[in-house]
Image (cartoon, rainbow, N blue to C red; front, top):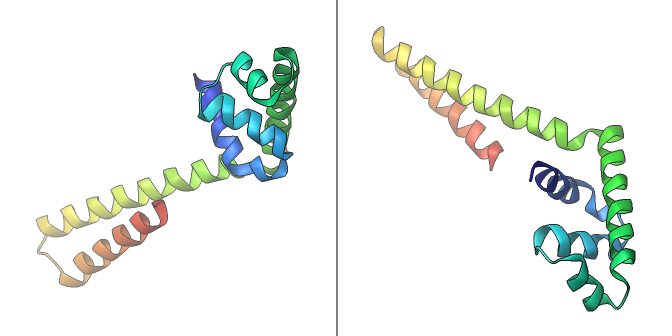
Length: 120
């Protein structure tokens, strides 16, 4: 299951760099959950031909990620934004405990808002 999710994510990042047929096969296999036999029947080639095309495309996606690291960087940014939101929440909580500065409260709300918009 983890490999399926990884390939699906890599397909989102690098799918446009594959051939249309490779994208089509990976979409059928990973996104639409078709079997190799179903894909072969739909496109008119052998099951082995579909399997080989999918394996080649998977290798290309993994190779692109190893070189460009776009998906890894995206995950890091997402984690960083989550941490920023948590810190802004802690700032708000501490501010409420120690006298409630309106400026601090407004800034922490603004930080959370920006982080949420970047996560979407």
